[in-house]
Length: 625
Image (cartoon, rainbow, N blue to C red; front, side, top):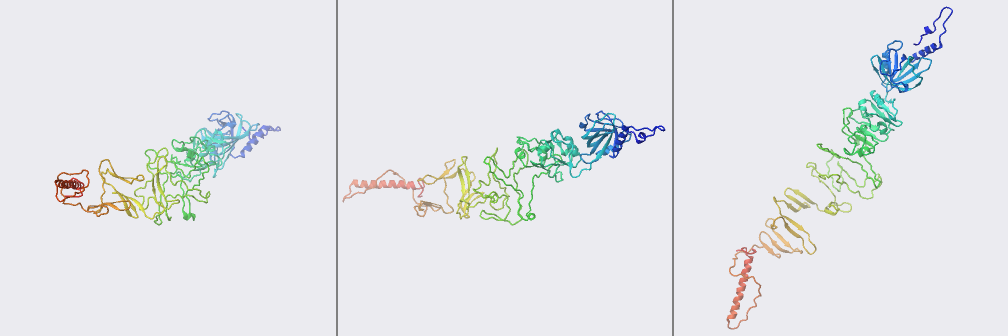
């Protein structure tokens, strides 16, 4: 115990004053020096490192090696017997990560000066106080039983930025305790760039420890998070728990849940974070792992729940006083072995999920109602606009036509439909409009087979002046020209037979075939009282029939002749020579008469056969009874 001045300088017996010991004077001087530090407390050192009451007026450390000490245990009364609980309890009042500086000064002949940061709260352990400390430096060794002055200098409260003391960033030593202590302050903590990288023995979530964080943007994501173990959710944010969470580092910018779920610099087959985008089995990991700016919504507790809207950009031309682009991308592909995308969406719909949209364009036109045709551009609202050649101010002029406006391809599976227009999506405008005056000729719709051969085309003429159309109605299909019907294909219930038109080689005309499963005849039917004409290549009518009858070789059709009975008797249809006639003399002989009779008989039998063959009863029906 330090002797007071009255003892050191006390008078001895008369005529024999006591000369004070120099050691007493030194101890007394040190004591006086300690008083100028304000709350200097006098304690006796105890060597035990156990977390327990060190004894009345004593203190101890949790490590026999002073530089390794992380806690100090102080009795509730100091060596002078004063109750110092209120004084010690005030040592953690600062809102700073470093609450203040604790200095231990020796009073013995051997000088001792040790300095520690108080980096945690003061714990009331009953008869003693427990204080979290971090060694800074000093000299001398603590000796059991010696007395020491403990002085505390308080840090000021945290301002806008709190330096994160107590972390080393060597890539090996865990910094979980230091980051946890910083978060407990619930202030903004600046995280400086480490010499190597911060290390975390176990994953640490700032959603749990609290606080807000501002990392040095010159460090990489791995330097800050140790491969995604530091789970960030509250950084330079909008202030809303569902708002943006933005992290800018030297190699990446993370928004939303991505800040807490990705190691970012891991370019291997899978990411070491915990995002649903972490591997190819769940989602396209290559997008997240290679993204310069990455946003994800990971959900979770209300504290770290991100907004369901990933990226939103708004443009209002009256605000910009000019045109605007809400989202823009400039892509230059200049390597033969690589492709480039201005926009890519990997879509994945799980079982039982609702709709998934790769791109939704919602148009709201409050201006004039305009309709665009291929030959005239109008002011309006366009859901999708593809410009061939692009802007010459960007990368120079185009050399060749662009390949395709839209390509629908097969990946690991196919599409059920190509383009679908819902029943109430269009007014009376075109589903598709193309010009017959395209560059290099008319526009066409082409179909190709597996070998790449063009197997079917719908082609317009480059000098068309008539509007051709194919209209579908409930009764059939109508082909029109200039608003006039040219061909109508009409449906019939339970129809099985049909007409086949087949082109033929040179020397053979076009073939019209009645087709179907049976042996039914084809039908040609006129309109009203009219009929059909069969003409040759010179447009000369050879056969014409209508409701009146039939005519041949340009004659007007007449009805079938009536009044003809059906001949009886022998019908002769054999080959015959024309009758040559007879030379008669003045007197007829039997042979002459017989020859005449035979000739008349032959003519009668053949004429009877002719009438029979053309009669409706058993012949062609050209004459009738």
